[in-house]
Length: 192
Image 1 (tube, rainbow, N blue to C red):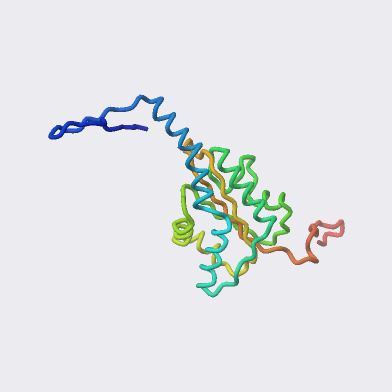
Image 2 (cartoon, rainbow, N blue to C red):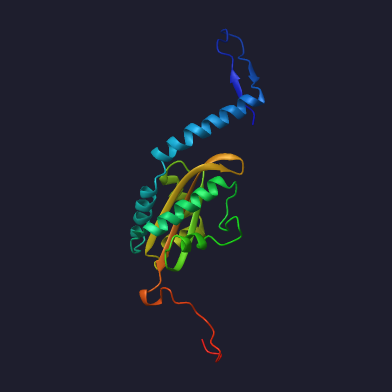
């Protein structure tokens, strides 16, 4: 990263000279910005409730049922956001190789169907949602009428070596109550 700064009092009529800051200054400034800026941006910009509200506005505009905010999905989304922000990776597969849905199961959301939308580096909700809606796969998840619940998590951290904001949106539909806890097994008679 190159960081340049202008000499403060350049005489009139002369070209302003710039000089390159020493590398440790760039690193120190990046670290300070990471410590100060993302936390302020998260609290002032991307908020989970605002993402839920904007998702429902988009769904309503496309004649889809509105989503209910679900505590278990929200816990799973926040865990995933923190996991991504602290793990220097950005993927739907967890660091241990397990699918993202294991975080949903760990939060005790009895899903029949679940989807995950990820975003990085968005500072406010409008561009975040616009970005998801411009992506065919994210748009399909958001507008899928079978989903009934939503959970959103937002975290700051370092992804691929860069300070950033991570947003995770989980969309889900629970299993019918009579199937919760039901595990398919094969019987000794070959049925099941």
